[in-house]
Length: 388
Image 1 (spheres, helix red, strand yellow):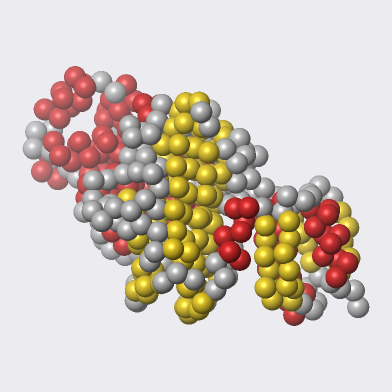
Image 2: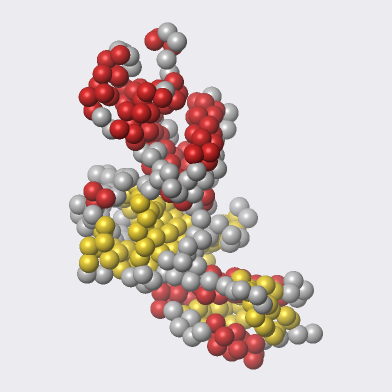
Protein backbone atom coordinates (compact mmCIF):
# COMPACT_ATOMS: atom_id res chain seq x y z
CA UNK A 1 0.00 0.00 0.00
CA UNK A 2 1.27 3.49 -0.82
CA UNK A 3 2.43 5.36 2.30
CA UNK A 4 0.10 8.29 1.66
CA UNK A 5 -2.87 5.89 1.81
CA UNK A 6 -1.95 4.25 5.11
CA UNK A 7 -4.51 4.75 7.88
CA UNK A 8 -4.89 4.00 11.58
CA UNK A 9 -6.45 0.59 10.99
CA UNK A 10 -3.53 -0.48 8.80
CA UNK A 11 -1.09 0.04 11.66
CA UNK A 12 -3.45 -1.51 14.21
CA UNK A 13 -3.64 -4.64 12.03
CA UNK A 14 0.01 -4.76 11.02
CA UNK A 15 1.66 -7.92 12.36
CA UNK A 16 5.06 -6.23 12.67
CA UNK A 17 3.73 -3.47 14.93
CA UNK A 18 1.75 -6.05 16.92
CA UNK A 19 4.96 -8.03 17.49
CA UNK A 20 6.81 -4.88 18.57
CA UNK A 21 3.97 -4.12 20.99
CA UNK A 22 4.19 -7.57 22.56
CA UNK A 23 7.98 -7.30 22.84
CA UNK A 24 7.72 -3.65 23.94
CA UNK A 25 11.03 -2.78 22.29
CA UNK A 26 11.61 1.02 22.01
CA UNK A 27 14.44 0.64 19.46
CA UNK A 28 12.34 -1.51 17.14
CA UNK A 29 9.41 0.88 17.52
CA UNK A 30 11.61 3.85 16.53
CA UNK A 31 12.93 1.93 13.53
CA UNK A 32 9.37 1.07 12.54
CA UNK A 33 8.36 4.74 12.77
CA UNK A 34 11.36 5.72 10.58
CA UNK A 35 10.23 3.12 8.06
CA UNK A 36 6.87 4.86 7.74
CA UNK A 37 8.04 8.48 7.82
CA UNK A 38 5.24 10.99 8.11
CA UNK A 39 2.97 8.74 10.21
CA UNK A 40 4.60 9.10 13.66
CA UNK A 41 1.46 10.28 15.48
CA UNK A 42 -0.76 7.63 13.89
CA UNK A 43 1.72 4.87 14.73
CA UNK A 44 2.08 6.14 18.31
CA UNK A 45 -1.71 6.05 18.74
CA UNK A 46 -1.94 2.52 17.34
CA UNK A 47 0.98 1.34 19.51
CA UNK A 48 -0.64 2.85 22.64
CA UNK A 49 -3.92 1.05 21.94
CA UNK A 50 -2.15 -2.25 21.24
CA UNK A 51 -0.18 -1.93 24.49
CA UNK A 52 -3.42 -1.62 26.43
CA UNK A 53 -5.20 -4.45 24.66
CA UNK A 54 -2.89 -7.06 26.16
CA UNK A 55 -4.96 -10.00 27.41
CA UNK A 56 -3.82 -12.97 29.45
CA UNK A 57 -3.95 -15.87 26.91
CA UNK A 58 -4.78 -18.31 29.70
CA UNK A 59 -8.00 -16.45 30.41
CA UNK A 60 -9.17 -15.73 26.86
CA UNK A 61 -8.93 -18.08 23.92
CA UNK A 62 -7.14 -16.97 20.75
CA UNK A 63 -10.37 -17.50 18.85
CA UNK A 64 -12.16 -15.08 21.15
CA UNK A 65 -9.33 -12.55 20.90
CA UNK A 66 -9.46 -12.74 17.10
CA UNK A 67 -13.23 -12.23 17.19
CA UNK A 68 -12.88 -9.22 19.48
CA UNK A 69 -10.16 -7.72 17.28
CA UNK A 70 -12.35 -8.16 14.20
CA UNK A 71 -15.24 -6.47 15.98
CA UNK A 72 -12.95 -3.66 17.11
CA UNK A 73 -11.75 -2.88 13.59
CA UNK A 74 -15.25 -2.99 12.14
CA UNK A 75 -16.61 -0.76 14.87
CA UNK A 76 -13.82 1.81 14.55
CA UNK A 77 -14.60 2.09 10.84
CA UNK A 78 -18.30 2.49 11.52
CA UNK A 79 -17.62 5.04 14.25
CA UNK A 80 -15.49 7.08 11.85
CA UNK A 81 -18.35 7.01 9.37
CA UNK A 82 -20.75 7.97 12.20
CA UNK A 83 -23.22 5.29 11.20
CA UNK A 84 -23.82 4.01 14.73
CA UNK A 85 -22.32 3.99 18.18
CA UNK A 86 -19.60 1.57 19.21
CA UNK A 87 -20.70 -1.75 20.69
CA UNK A 88 -18.61 -4.78 21.53
CA UNK A 89 -19.02 -8.33 22.69
CA UNK A 90 -16.23 -9.11 25.15
CA UNK A 91 -14.91 -12.58 25.78
CA UNK A 92 -14.05 -12.16 29.47
CA UNK A 93 -13.77 -9.74 32.36
CA UNK A 94 -10.06 -9.43 31.72
CA UNK A 95 -10.57 -8.71 28.03
CA UNK A 96 -13.22 -6.14 28.86
CA UNK A 97 -10.95 -4.42 31.35
CA UNK A 98 -8.18 -4.09 28.77
CA UNK A 99 -10.60 -2.82 26.14
CA UNK A 100 -12.01 -0.21 28.53
CA UNK A 101 -8.61 1.38 28.85
CA UNK A 102 -7.75 0.96 25.19
CA UNK A 103 -10.90 2.68 24.06
CA UNK A 104 -10.63 5.47 26.62
CA UNK A 105 -7.10 6.28 25.46
CA UNK A 106 -8.12 6.01 21.82
CA UNK A 107 -11.14 8.27 22.29
CA UNK A 108 -9.12 10.87 24.17
CA UNK A 109 -6.47 10.95 21.50
CA UNK A 110 -8.84 11.09 18.54
CA UNK A 111 -11.10 13.79 19.95
CA UNK A 112 -14.31 11.83 20.54
CA UNK A 113 -16.72 14.04 22.46
CA UNK A 114 -17.37 13.46 26.14
CA UNK A 115 -20.95 12.26 25.67
CA UNK A 116 -19.84 9.49 23.33
CA UNK A 117 -16.97 8.51 25.61
CA UNK A 118 -19.29 8.24 28.59
CA UNK A 119 -21.75 6.15 26.59
CA UNK A 120 -19.03 3.75 25.50
CA UNK A 121 -17.56 3.44 29.00
CA UNK A 122 -20.96 2.59 30.48
CA UNK A 123 -21.63 0.15 27.65
CA UNK A 124 -18.36 -1.64 28.34
CA UNK A 125 -19.04 -1.58 32.08
CA UNK A 126 -22.36 -3.28 31.41
CA UNK A 127 -20.47 -6.14 29.71
CA UNK A 128 -18.48 -6.96 32.85
CA UNK A 129 -19.93 -10.00 34.59
CA UNK A 130 -20.22 -10.25 38.36
CA UNK A 131 -20.19 -14.05 38.47
CA UNK A 132 -17.52 -14.09 41.13
CA UNK A 133 -17.50 -15.01 44.81
CA UNK A 134 -15.35 -12.12 46.02
CA UNK A 135 -14.93 -8.40 45.51
CA UNK A 136 -12.38 -7.85 42.75
CA UNK A 137 -10.08 -5.07 41.58
CA UNK A 138 -9.39 -5.51 37.87
CA UNK A 139 -6.65 -3.75 35.92
CA UNK A 140 -5.86 -5.20 32.51
CA UNK A 141 -5.27 -8.91 32.94
CA UNK A 142 -4.51 -8.52 36.66
CA UNK A 143 -7.27 -9.37 39.14
CA UNK A 144 -6.94 -8.87 42.90
CA UNK A 145 -9.51 -10.30 45.33
CA UNK A 146 -10.69 -8.25 48.31
CA UNK A 147 -12.45 -9.59 51.38
CA UNK A 148 -16.06 -8.58 51.98
CA UNK A 149 -16.62 -5.17 53.63
CA UNK A 150 -12.91 -4.34 53.61
CA UNK A 151 -11.89 -0.70 53.15
CA UNK A 152 -9.78 0.01 50.07
CA UNK A 153 -7.61 3.13 50.28
CA UNK A 154 -6.15 4.75 47.17
CA UNK A 155 -2.91 6.59 47.97
CA UNK A 156 -1.82 9.78 46.23
CA UNK A 157 0.59 7.88 43.97
CA UNK A 158 -2.04 5.28 43.01
CA UNK A 159 -1.15 2.39 45.35
CA UNK A 160 -4.06 0.49 46.90
CA UNK A 161 -4.18 -0.34 50.60
CA UNK A 162 -6.66 -2.92 51.92
CA UNK A 163 -7.15 -2.38 55.62
CA UNK A 164 -3.70 -1.54 56.94
CA UNK A 165 -1.80 -3.55 54.33
CA UNK A 166 -0.64 -2.59 50.87
CA UNK A 167 -2.44 -4.89 48.45
CA UNK A 168 -1.56 -3.48 45.01
CA UNK A 169 1.27 -1.19 43.95
CA UNK A 170 0.50 1.48 41.39
CA UNK A 171 3.13 0.02 39.08
CA UNK A 172 1.29 -3.33 39.14
CA UNK A 173 -1.92 -1.73 37.90
CA UNK A 174 -1.59 -2.31 34.18
CA UNK A 175 -4.09 0.35 33.14
CA UNK A 176 -4.87 3.95 34.00
CA UNK A 177 -8.50 2.99 34.56
CA UNK A 178 -9.34 0.46 37.27
CA UNK A 179 -12.49 -1.59 37.78
CA UNK A 180 -13.99 -2.51 41.13
CA UNK A 181 -16.51 -5.37 40.92
CA UNK A 182 -18.78 -6.19 43.88
CA UNK A 183 -20.72 -9.46 43.46
CA UNK A 184 -24.16 -10.16 44.89
CA UNK A 185 -24.01 -10.80 48.61
CA UNK A 186 -20.90 -8.64 49.10
CA UNK A 187 -20.16 -4.99 49.83
CA UNK A 188 -17.06 -2.82 49.94
CA UNK A 189 -15.90 0.76 50.33
CA UNK A 190 -13.06 2.77 48.86
CA UNK A 191 -11.35 5.97 49.95
CA UNK A 192 -10.02 7.85 46.93
CA UNK A 193 -6.76 9.75 47.19
CA UNK A 194 -8.61 13.10 47.31
CA UNK A 195 -10.35 12.02 50.55
CA UNK A 196 -13.70 11.12 48.95
CA UNK A 197 -15.33 8.01 50.45
CA UNK A 198 -17.50 5.64 48.43
CA UNK A 199 -19.54 2.65 49.64
CA UNK A 200 -20.62 0.11 47.01
CA UNK A 201 -23.64 -2.13 47.49
CA UNK A 202 -24.08 -5.72 46.26
CA UNK A 203 -24.03 -6.28 42.51
CA UNK A 204 -22.22 -3.01 41.72
CA UNK A 205 -19.46 -2.24 39.21
CA UNK A 206 -17.25 0.84 39.25
CA UNK A 207 -14.65 2.28 36.89
CA UNK A 208 -12.30 4.91 38.32
CA UNK A 209 -8.89 6.36 37.35
CA UNK A 210 -5.68 5.31 39.04
CA UNK A 211 -5.14 9.04 39.65
CA UNK A 212 -7.79 11.73 39.09
CA UNK A 213 -7.25 14.24 36.29
CA UNK A 214 -6.04 17.77 37.03
CA UNK A 215 -9.36 19.47 36.25
CA UNK A 216 -12.05 16.97 37.35
CA UNK A 217 -12.74 13.74 39.21
CA UNK A 218 -14.76 11.22 37.16
CA UNK A 219 -16.08 7.75 37.95
CA UNK A 220 -18.52 5.40 36.19
CA UNK A 221 -21.04 3.26 38.10
CA UNK A 222 -23.54 0.52 37.51
CA UNK A 223 -25.28 -0.49 40.72
CA UNK A 224 -25.61 1.43 44.00
CA UNK A 225 -23.10 3.77 45.59
CA UNK A 226 -23.11 6.15 48.56
CA UNK A 227 -20.59 8.99 48.29
CA UNK A 228 -19.13 11.49 50.73
CA UNK A 229 -17.30 13.77 48.30
CA UNK A 230 -14.36 15.84 49.50
CA UNK A 231 -15.00 19.46 48.52
CA UNK A 232 -12.94 21.02 45.72
CA UNK A 233 -14.10 24.07 43.79
CA UNK A 234 -11.37 23.57 41.20
CA UNK A 235 -12.11 19.87 40.54
CA UNK A 236 -15.80 18.91 40.32
CA UNK A 237 -16.66 15.29 41.10
CA UNK A 238 -18.74 13.66 38.34
CA UNK A 239 -20.52 10.32 38.60
CA UNK A 240 -21.65 8.83 35.29
CA UNK A 241 -24.59 6.38 35.34
CA UNK A 242 -26.82 4.96 32.61
CA UNK A 243 -29.72 7.42 32.98
CA UNK A 244 -27.92 10.54 34.18
CA UNK A 245 -24.73 12.19 35.38
CA UNK A 246 -24.34 13.69 38.84
CA UNK A 247 -21.94 16.61 39.34
CA UNK A 248 -20.91 17.92 42.75
CA UNK A 249 -18.21 20.00 44.38
CA UNK A 250 -18.52 18.39 47.80
CA UNK A 251 -21.53 16.62 49.29
CA UNK A 252 -23.12 13.38 50.56
CA UNK A 253 -25.57 11.46 48.40
CA UNK A 254 -26.79 8.01 47.38
CA UNK A 255 -27.08 6.88 43.75
CA UNK A 256 -28.87 3.72 42.64
CA UNK A 257 -28.49 2.70 39.00
CA UNK A 258 -28.78 -1.07 38.56
CA UNK A 259 -29.22 -2.12 34.93
CA UNK A 260 -31.99 -4.56 35.88
CA UNK A 261 -34.00 -2.00 37.88
CA UNK A 262 -36.79 -0.03 36.22
CA UNK A 263 -36.18 3.01 38.45
CA UNK A 264 -32.87 4.80 39.09
CA UNK A 265 -32.44 7.44 41.77
CA UNK A 266 -30.25 10.09 43.36
CA UNK A 267 -30.98 11.03 46.98
CA UNK A 268 -29.20 14.00 48.52
CA UNK A 269 -28.19 13.90 52.19
CA UNK A 270 -26.04 17.02 52.46
CA UNK A 271 -24.84 19.88 50.23
CA UNK A 272 -26.13 20.12 46.68
CA UNK A 273 -25.87 18.12 43.45
CA UNK A 274 -26.71 18.70 39.81
CA UNK A 275 -28.40 15.77 38.11
CA UNK A 276 -27.85 16.05 34.36
CA UNK A 277 -29.48 14.29 31.42
CA UNK A 278 -29.33 15.10 27.72
CA UNK A 279 -32.57 17.06 28.08
CA UNK A 280 -32.18 19.02 31.31
CA UNK A 281 -30.34 19.70 34.56
CA UNK A 282 -31.93 19.43 38.02
CA UNK A 283 -30.35 20.79 41.19
CA UNK A 284 -31.24 18.98 44.41
CA UNK A 285 -31.25 20.31 47.96
CA UNK A 286 -30.89 18.10 51.06
CA UNK A 287 -33.71 15.57 51.63
CA UNK A 288 -34.70 15.63 47.98
CA UNK A 289 -34.64 12.61 45.69
CA UNK A 290 -34.47 12.46 41.91
CA UNK A 291 -36.21 9.42 40.44
CA UNK A 292 -36.03 8.32 36.79
CA UNK A 293 -38.38 5.67 35.43
CA UNK A 294 -39.30 4.82 31.82
CA UNK A 295 -37.86 8.08 30.51
CA UNK A 296 -39.80 10.22 32.99
CA UNK A 297 -38.22 11.97 35.98
CA UNK A 298 -39.62 13.41 39.19
CA UNK A 299 -38.22 15.14 42.27
CA UNK A 300 -39.73 14.67 45.72
CA UNK A 301 -38.94 15.13 49.40
CA UNK A 302 -37.73 11.91 51.03
CA UNK A 303 -36.48 10.40 54.26
CA UNK A 304 -32.86 10.00 53.19
CA UNK A 305 -32.09 7.19 55.66
CA UNK A 306 -34.56 4.97 53.80
CA UNK A 307 -32.13 5.08 50.86
CA UNK A 308 -28.81 5.04 52.73
CA UNK A 309 -29.55 2.54 55.51
CA UNK A 310 -28.15 -0.35 53.46
CA UNK A 311 -24.70 0.76 54.66
CA UNK A 312 -25.81 -0.17 58.19
CA UNK A 313 -27.20 -3.55 57.16
CA UNK A 314 -30.79 -2.31 57.27
CA UNK A 315 -33.57 -2.30 54.66
CA UNK A 316 -36.43 0.13 55.24
CA UNK A 317 -39.46 -0.51 53.04
CA UNK A 318 -42.21 2.07 52.76
CA UNK A 319 -45.10 0.82 50.64
CA UNK A 320 -42.82 -1.05 48.24
CA UNK A 321 -44.11 -3.88 46.08
CA UNK A 322 -43.10 -7.38 47.15
CA UNK A 323 -41.42 -8.15 43.83
CA UNK A 324 -39.11 -5.13 44.23
CA UNK A 325 -38.42 -6.02 47.84
CA UNK A 326 -37.59 -9.63 46.95
CA UNK A 327 -35.28 -8.41 44.16
CA UNK A 328 -33.35 -6.34 46.70
CA UNK A 329 -33.16 -9.27 49.13
CA UNK A 330 -31.95 -11.57 46.35
CA UNK A 331 -29.17 -9.13 45.53
CA UNK A 332 -28.15 -8.73 49.16
CA UNK A 333 -28.12 -12.45 50.04
CA UNK A 334 -26.92 -13.64 46.61
CA UNK A 335 -29.85 -15.99 46.01
CA UNK A 336 -32.41 -16.50 43.28
CA UNK A 337 -35.90 -15.69 44.58
CA UNK A 338 -38.73 -16.88 42.34
CA UNK A 339 -42.22 -15.57 43.01
CA UNK A 340 -45.73 -16.36 41.87
CA UNK A 341 -46.64 -13.77 39.27
CA UNK A 342 -50.26 -13.57 40.37
CA UNK A 343 -51.08 -10.78 42.83
CA UNK A 344 -47.47 -10.23 43.97
CA UNK A 345 -47.12 -6.86 42.24
CA UNK A 346 -50.20 -5.60 44.12
CA UNK A 347 -48.88 -6.54 47.55
CA UNK A 348 -47.24 -3.72 49.53
CA UNK A 349 -45.09 -3.81 52.63
CA UNK A 350 -44.01 -1.25 55.20
CA UNK A 351 -41.39 -2.09 57.74
CA UNK A 352 -37.72 -2.46 58.65
CA UNK A 353 -35.59 -5.51 57.97
CA UNK A 354 -32.32 -6.34 59.71
CA UNK A 355 -30.00 -7.56 56.97
CA UNK A 356 -27.53 -8.85 59.54
CA UNK A 357 -30.09 -11.61 60.15
CA UNK A 358 -29.99 -14.71 57.98
CA UNK A 359 -32.25 -14.89 54.95
CA UNK A 360 -34.22 -17.63 56.70
CA UNK A 361 -34.93 -15.28 59.63
CA UNK A 362 -35.93 -12.42 57.31
CA UNK A 363 -38.30 -14.58 55.27
CA UNK A 364 -39.82 -16.10 58.39
CA UNK A 365 -40.53 -12.64 59.77
CA UNK A 366 -42.04 -11.41 56.50
CA UNK A 367 -44.20 -14.47 55.93
CA UNK A 368 -45.70 -14.10 59.43
CA UNK A 369 -47.22 -10.75 58.48
CA UNK A 370 -47.66 -11.11 54.72
CA UNK A 371 -49.66 -13.54 52.63
CA UNK A 372 -46.94 -15.82 51.30
CA UNK A 373 -45.13 -19.05 52.05
CA UNK A 374 -41.61 -20.00 50.96
CA UNK A 375 -39.45 -23.04 50.49
CA UNK A 376 -35.94 -23.78 49.31
CA UNK A 377 -35.58 -25.08 45.79
CA UNK A 378 -32.49 -26.49 44.13
CA UNK A 379 -29.17 -24.73 44.64
CA UNK A 380 -29.59 -21.14 45.80
CA UNK A 381 -33.22 -20.86 44.70
CA UNK A 382 -35.99 -19.72 47.06
CA UNK A 383 -39.59 -20.24 45.90
CA UNK A 384 -42.27 -17.79 47.07
CA UNK A 385 -45.95 -18.78 46.86
CA UNK A 386 -48.77 -16.38 47.59
CA UNK A 387 -51.54 -17.61 49.87
CA UNK A 388 -55.01 -17.52 48.38
